[in-house]
Image (cartoon, rainbow over all chains, first blue to last red; front, side):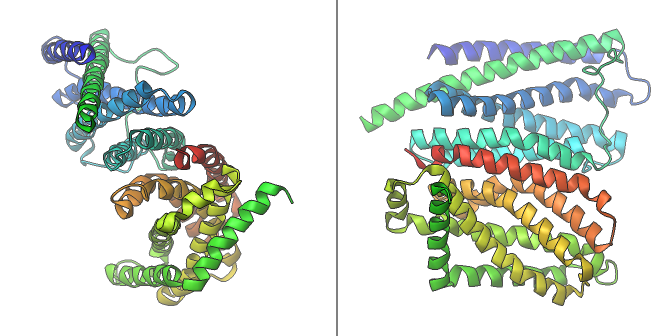
Length: 224
Length: 226
């Protein structure tokens, strides 16, 4: 049960740090000249997207490792990561349109990146639905691993197939071949937010992992 | 002929024979596809959108929905009377078993598509003309991809409580790349565009087939073996 407690402590700390990110973003970071205050959502949206994609990739990798090693810890981690990833995905998919309405003039557009993340989100909701519909732990672990692996390989295909439509989404500004095109204060706030969201991801996954351990113990006690 | 191919063909033949004897699933899937086409016809405003503009999407949405209905039944028949356990106990490599089920599903979905296509021409007054071989080709290319993923998911879905719901939820995201590609190629074929404009999409469809047929054959044992 120690994992759950450590996860709880880490999550609470990350939440406190997140309020720090708000303060940093709102009062210690310059306002973007063209987008105005709407751009502030960027410090929340981009790190949430990062955490969601990190979570979904780890589900796929854990799935592949599970089919190889058959270690239940990998399955538990994959499940926890998928659930947390769906939560971050929901943050990403709600903050995106809020920003897009004033800036693009539309809530939603079928742009490559938007479509990709939306389908990933649906895929992992499906992953969780499948887990919930299966009773046998071994079967659940094997099936989820298969969906995780197939999902990981689906990403490049969705990306390729929707990329051919023109993309509206802002191009990468930090991870690109040339230097980041952001003023240093904005970059600082963004990087702090990245760290905080990664910690929050870790904390929530640990919490969920610990909860899965408790659930399994309870199930075992009930079945005697 | 290599042993595994012979076994795969035997399994596919068994499925097809069983299907031809009852014909209920095949008939229902065909009727379902026809109904989807009819519904589409009423869902469009003929003064605003011409049939040819809408044709590729109508065709592919119908194919996708019909395939979903067809795939739902693929492992349902194996569930009854523990038929799958019998198949698994037989000395058949899992790859051949997957290949057999995939071939049977392809035959099944292919038949539904073959009946739907003339109905589509009839209802939507589309002149396929010289595009017919091309459309058959792209249909095969796209169908192999999503039917192989669908075969895996169908084997998983029958083990769950809401099989009929679980399959579409899992499979639809995987249908996006083949469907987008197939719609793009179909609309270019109908507009009589040169091959060079479709090549990128055709490559994507072929790559999808290679990747997912290989991957599904590899992970299939994890789905059926305890």
